[in-house]
Length: 231
Image (tube, rainbow, N blue to C red):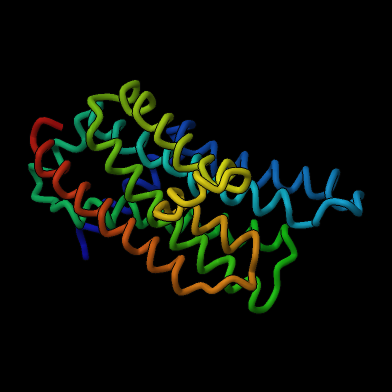
């Protein structure tokens, strides 16, 4: 627990020195707020929460993944990971320390999205539940991609196509039944299902997201141990 707190604190300090990692936490809720106030609120043909659900889904599946990848790749590039490994930091301690900070920050942003969207009661609870579980999946996947990268440039090159596929496939699936069938295994598709229809059952999406997290966590541990002192 002490090691995880130390890694958590380290990341809290490093976050504000990494604009690539910080930007998604600012730009997506700001865009959601602007579009909701200036466009949705004044148009009877647009649901008031449309831009909130859109930006929240993209934040969870696109922006956050890139942020997580950028953070780990920066640790690798600056040799911080090597020092942490030499200090005896285990894979789960690094994952929970770095990921824990990102999760806490993303949970706050998710709550802000909920307030902008005007969600209350069970709608807000359902929205936050699917968002925080989806956020957890995106963080672990992003950390894994970052762990497999040699430097920040490589992480950006790897995370961008992954983020595009993960983040925008649900949007394509809404217009294409074939894509929708395959998209069901993605955690982002499950986020999209709930945020666009709060009457949809929550159990299946949570199970799919949990399975995604489990797979990504195993890949992260393997990547961490493989990287070892070379990081």
